[in-house]
Image (cartoon, rainbow, N blue to C red; front, side, top):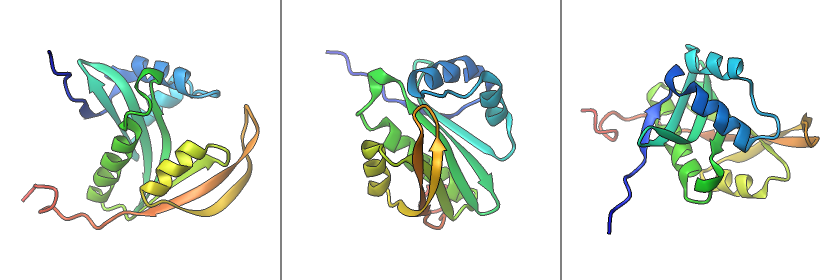
Length: 161
């Protein structure tokens, strides 16, 4: 019996743009355009990470950094790989990388009716701190604003010293 290869975590570049576009289309009712995704991949204040196997992108998360805070802009997993912990792993790795960049808070918006996502975020330490009325379209729905405190970054714990 052959063992399946583990997922490779990588910071995404324009080399994965076409795969990221397809991931968006399979994950969202209002996917971002190729140009918006390109801007995130190339942005100085952006961090886009993905889980790949043999070069194929199965999941991605994009964050925007401002001073010592960050926002999760997108997280997506291909339908064939959902419910396998890939989204959770991306968020945990993203939090680690953001802490290394001296971020102390991470924010996100989530559809009020998206119970599975809300449960995931709660399990990772996110708390509701606000509501954005009619934030989402297709279908129209309120967003809950969630926040999580990131642990202080310690180079020793990251295995860097």
